[in-house]
Image (cartoon, rainbow, N blue to C red; front, side, top):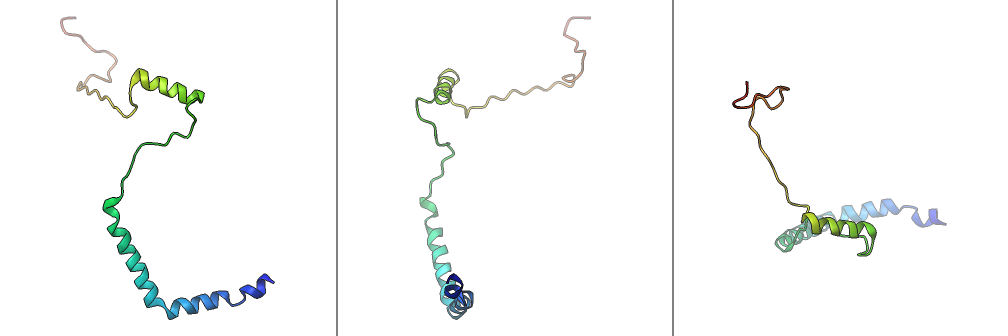
Length: 96
């Protein structure tokens, strides 16, 4: 039964597409331009959604962590310029 209903389906589909290819290309181009015009209204967010309930133990632990250490997005960078950084023996000033 299904084979009878789908017999020639792709041939008919191809025929419709080829007969109306200009119209289809114009519709695709118009839709692309429309979506391009909506670009300025888009807003992006880098925050992650919290999928756990507020009373979940992992969520409670995370909230405790945030209260103690603050937001996790902060970064602290230390820079050291010392040519003897990777050597085993480092002499200190004033010591022989």
